[in-house]
Image (tube, rainbow, N blue to C red; front, side, top):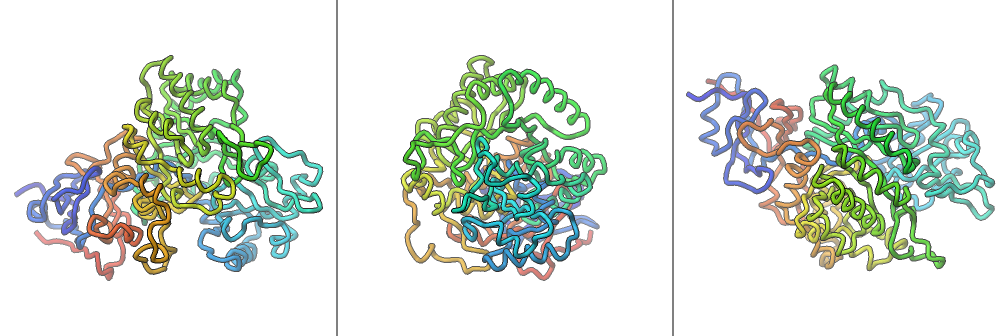
Length: 563
């Protein structure tokens, strides 16, 4: 008789991290994958006390790894005024009202409101709910702050406040602030908001971990470690969770490069990051990545473009967050010190500048760490083909690749339709990873995979799955040609992300750490437009079942097997 397993998952179909295999079952012993094969072969390892999970035909795959998340503060937001569930103006305002009634905090904070519902929210809307305490609410993209009059007053922001570099204080017809602050303008209020305490961030981190398990995410990359936009550094919360053994998922993090960096300050930054890398590693936290925002976002007209924004007759095309010499300096120096760069870039000029800096670093330092560029919303074809030869991974936020009517106003339909050129990047030999940028967008990987494969948005939660949106052909044929295959998309969100940010293969193979998920169906047996209907039935982290739907779920049964 073979060694008895702790856990068996049978009656599924195994996607090993690269391809869908003929195997139907997986055995787990002591936190590691012990066998992969047929049901009969795996059930040979059943013993007294072995837990057996019936996948009921669902795909068994490596746990999703989110290559770009802000998990700690997503959790903090979930525990504060969380507006992400609102589907109307009325629901948003009611959530704010309810949050104000249950909290006696000095500041009311939270976020997740939708630009689709509030294209230009005002302080008066918040004043009608709360006028005696400051209110500051981030948008879903976390590049904009919606504040009430009390918050503006406390921050000293009025009609005489100069417009900040790389930001905008929106003004009404009388010249007074509306309460809508973009990019660095948000920091004018953000810097006086009391930061979350370590206890609050720690609670948020554990809340986020539990939520991520419910959607099959078994590991992630914390995209900013350091003080950012008025938020406290979440590193102490991670170190505490590791020390107290409450952080069960494998994680890594990126040390934050603030936009205030100057070229002459780069050597000191590198020295500080090396010291932090060593300190964090000794405590069990991997921080071998450095994060910088090269530009902003098209919505706020802060992404750096090669051609002007549509509604700017003066030729305005956005700006970089750093000057080009500084970008070249920190990319080269951090590359030489063994740091992978994790670069936020949204505009095509920003992409070109980033790739030029990486190319210069490669020329100076030789081959080095695998850098990654996140978002990829505007990439010229000739630049898309540079990723592979330069060894730059594409860190994809798939949900963003659906056509966005709000971006059309800023960059025009032609540039929008040419965005997110995933297939060109992949065909150029680049490695692919995927992440959500949660809480900027929903963290559910199946929604993002749907968009990457179909190139149109999934139906809203609770809505029936359509044959096609509005019964029509896919709305973006050019973008459809940039779609990835299901193998590529699921591989990017599992083994691709694991290799990039956790440094291990993330495959369903004997000897690998048993981070696994079971879906409620097999996407390879579904029509492409049905992918978004999938959910996670079971999540396994380090060989332990951390999430399982109710035993009454029609697609999931668990049994305690006898010898």
